[in-house]
Image (cartoon, rainbow, N blue to C red; front, side):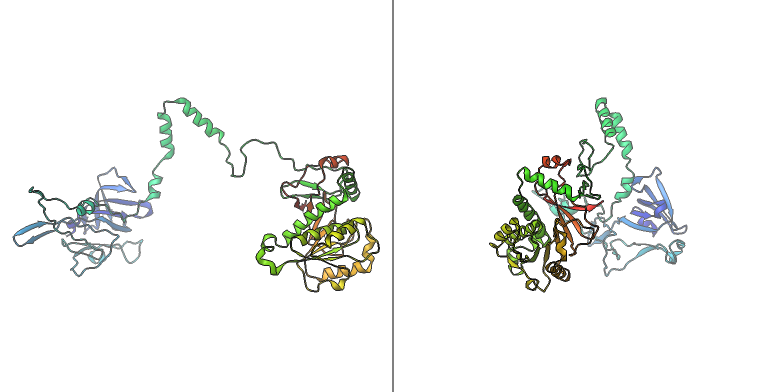
Length: 481
């Protein structure tokens, strides 16, 4: 009965060592438990030998790619030849017909595979012509002979021509892309192409390009050669003792307060008056404050009922005037601003001018700590300290306001704080310096630098070799070196 399956196309998997073989069954020996294939293919490559014989112990899996049976049926007074029927391993079905199969298994005397355990390989095929097994045999039906225009001979219908015997390939079998790709030797093919090329100039040009391409570049790298980057572009005649660096790596040195004071005085001589400097500081500090408050995520027309609240703590000096200018710009951006300014009989002209402008906004001005909100606010801006008068810390109004700011759980932004060996009275989360940073005491505050619009020649007048570290921004973060 085993000879009935001679001519079937099978795929035999012998494991990772021997590989996969495909071919046509030439013989099946149940006594010696062997199966032979003719015209075999090994891992997609045709074998040099015409026939290969396999032992059941080496077979790990066996798949039928094409089983061809000739079925002959005899009808009353007619002999009808049937089409070959095909069984594909990808289809499964059951019929009520009797299955008659050939089995190479333990029950038929086949020794078990010692590497697979107690359940060895088994080969089970339908034997009787026209019968069906559990894999779903497709029986062929006799074709009708059509006589067209009086002519004799059978004509195929359109469906038979499209879906008939021409599609005899098993489309369910997976193609081994990895195995076939490993057989392709790209280096040998390219060397063969280069050797067959008659144009030596093209070959030389190809080799030159391959030698020149020694480095790969990212999408954000420039392939053009540029000068080496100089990160220390700012030099000062008097160093403050500390250095910072920007996000791009530029080094920003600190300067002592005396040199910073000379820089601002030189700017005033060239026309950058105090009023213009206050406006620049107010714009930059308010822009930073708006970013800290949430920016466009917080200040939207749909969020009118949750406007942020900012408390400004200002003293009667230039630093206080800078804070009032910041509060005016915040109030113009629909932020609820509460300005604290103590009552003094005589204040500086810059402070009085900024208070008059602030009074034209919707902001609220208070002079007593009792009028400050008891609940936490969104942001506190500290401008209480002064570079020229450190004795303000000893006054009662200053201490009471500092206590309120420390007890309120709102984050604090300090604008232009003075240099002091003692810690600041109000713990600030962010610190904003003007032009060039001062050597502030080491603390947890994050330092930012503000561009107040000083020209490059003004820096050179006081002996500072200056190149702007701001890039496209007016406020940049600084990191300790």
